[in-house]
View 1 (cartoon, one colour):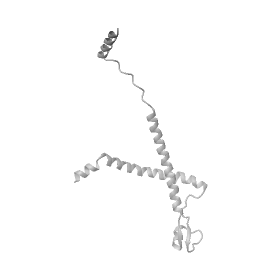
View 2: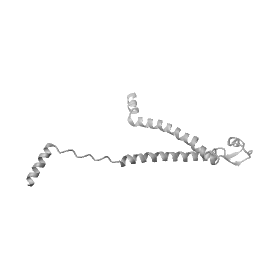
View 3: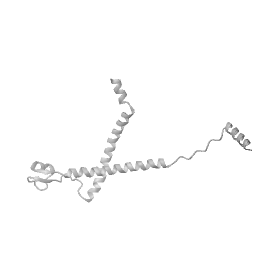
View 4: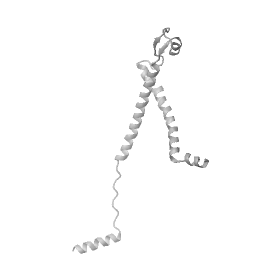
Length: 140
């Protein structure tokens, strides 16, 4: 049973999948840093970046300026701000991945579009030369 498991785990598809998951996790951190450290501060120039403390009080009273956690303790609240932040992050990540895939596809198309120069036909062999001579003599 152990031998069977080792054969299964060492198959190419399983190893490829494992490598893909590891690279995907690393790429996820890169994209997360791009969103959090580069894009969101740029958006922050135009307004609030952190929407996570935005909420609507459904029942009860909340002191003005209370955070979402404080508001949840004091009343029934609808905390929609975190959803907005996550949705914006998703859109930015999806856009970044779209640009990466678009660039990869463009590079693949360039490789496919560059046809290899046609090779010159090889010179005729001695047998072929003799057959050509015989054909030419028969035509005369």
